[in-house]
Amino acid sequence: MFMQALSKEITEDIRCCVCGNTNPNKFKLIYRRENFDVTECNNCGFYFIPPYYRKKIEYQQYKNEAVTQAITLRK
Image (cartoon, rainbow, N blue to C red):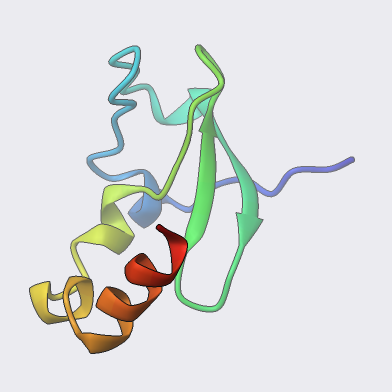
C-alpha cells in the first residue's frame, strides 16, 4: 500500500507529543479527509492531526452545542 508524502506546509512545526520526534521525514500520511489529515509518527506509531490543521480550528469550533451533544451521547 502506497502512502502519500506529507506536504512541506503540513510538516511545519510537526512534533510527536509521545516521543518528541520533529523530523518531517519520519511521519507518514495515514488518511486524508476534506479538512484535515491524520499522520503517524514512524518512531513510535502515534496517530495525530498535525498542528497545521489544529491552528485553523477556532475555539468556537471546539465547544458548541453540537460538540456538547456528541459528548453527552457518548457517556
